[in-house]
Amino acid sequence: MSKNSVALIGFMATGKTTIGKSLAIYLGEEYRFIETDQLIIQKTGKTISSIFTEEGEEKFREYENEVCEKVSKFNKVVISCGGGVVLNKKNVESLKKNCHIVLLRASPKEIYERIIRNGKTSRPVINIKDSKREIKKIQKFRKPFYKEAAEIVIDTTEKKIQNIVREIAIKTLLKT
Image (tube, rainbow, N blue to C red):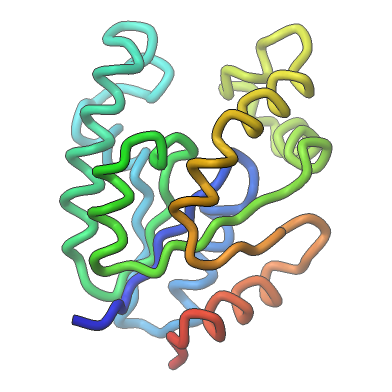
């Protein structure tokens, strides 16, 4: 079976949601956009922060695994994956069956600026005293997981959305 979907992975604020929505439109009306975190919110009726606080990260990762298993079976979807989805090999294996896995990355400075600029203060990392250092620390820890999972790597720092979308479409050979 040939792959006809795209899973976008990467750290928060690398553009997974924004680029994913644009990519789904670019690929044509038969493609739809899915966000794993939103599906978890719909499934549980709780925010991601609430799940972490009330049930813990382990339970959140269980929900994430269930969602990845489900969406990996869909055809012609663009999936924006939560930043930590790659921490579970089962998620990556599920996604690789039907998806081109594209890693979006950006510099820690760019990520920090995007988070602040977009007012995403619900992000736990922003509530830490030294957010920039925490971003670097998490990125360093996740780097080998992202590297192992990714088929394609695209740096989104200072690039226009439409250029990134075209680059993904060309590299995955999914064009309308």
